[in-house]
Image (cartoon, rainbow, N blue to C red; front, side, top):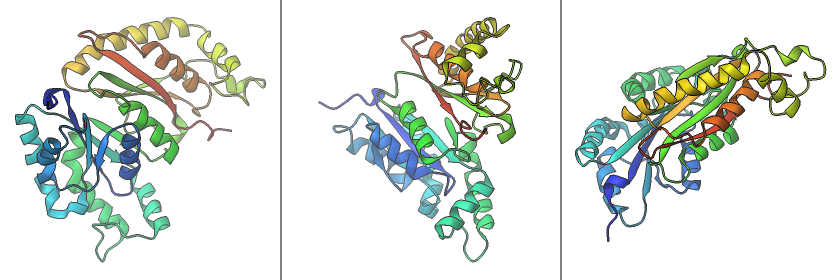
Length: 295
């Protein structure tokens, strides 16, 4: 018996060349998804039907290597919607300077570079993908993520039944290294006393019990966390109603080592398993973008 297509989902992985699409695809494959690379968009519906008996979860990588085929993507996505097939778009991005360094280190040309510079190819690709990025369900900025951090983020977001919950990535960061461009909500925890100024706590991180206790028990922090969680619960159901199932909460402090790490871990713990109605639960995990950079 064929599987109910209304319970299946197709994920389109796209984004900037050099940003890490292949890593995202490999991570989803490791998490149990059936992944196809460099698929012409016109074949999306056919592939979904072909895998009906073999896989609940299908992901395809579509990018500018497809040249004219890429222009067919919007029409193919509309056909999926007409069939009532759930689909999500992951857009993988990175800052231009990061992309340039990656292409230079690999000694490979940008696919749209032609006889010009790498930056020219990147600019052409950004123009071509502008609409796709604005309509993506999840934007993943890999500028300051290493391969292992990106793999962890994707595998935890897409492990298991992708239709079951609101996935929340609680991302700690340091303001001195820049605000994450893929953040949906940003929370500043620099109002908390900084353990950096405590000689005993300075070498530690927010993952250590001593720092965690100092941060979470500081004045006003318990009340703040309780109200923040309540606020999140009040908007989570609305996100689901709008079809947004992947959310990044960015938690920042000065260097991304003490306060933001401890608060992110605590928020992920409190949000994970939260009931947001209609048999939907939150699946939350913490990832620490800048931990190790601040010494």
